Length: 130
Image (cartoon, rainbow, N blue to C red; front, side, top):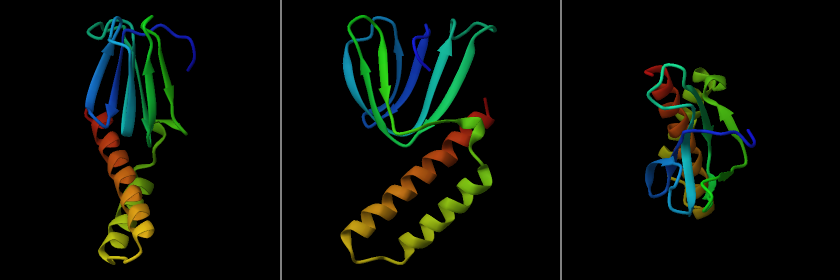
């Protein structure tokens, strides 16, 4: 998405979940695996269009002019996530964690996979309840 006017953007950051409105203090935020919700139009209006994307990480730059740039390797619309594939990926990551590998790089890789699949599972659950 490029050059669109939005009312609010909700982000999952390493500092916590954050809602960004016009006039927000300029910031550079590290994104953690999770949802980005983009609201086109007033958030409480019935005509508001909400678009939700899952990102596995990245950065958000809030500029002094209230524009925002999001840099992520990929942004997947939440409705395109396959719940069965996510569940299977999470199960596999949990099984790999249970093997207690001794190699530190393998441990880190397994932890990242688990974190991403867990965040995808949570994103699917959140989008299903809204």
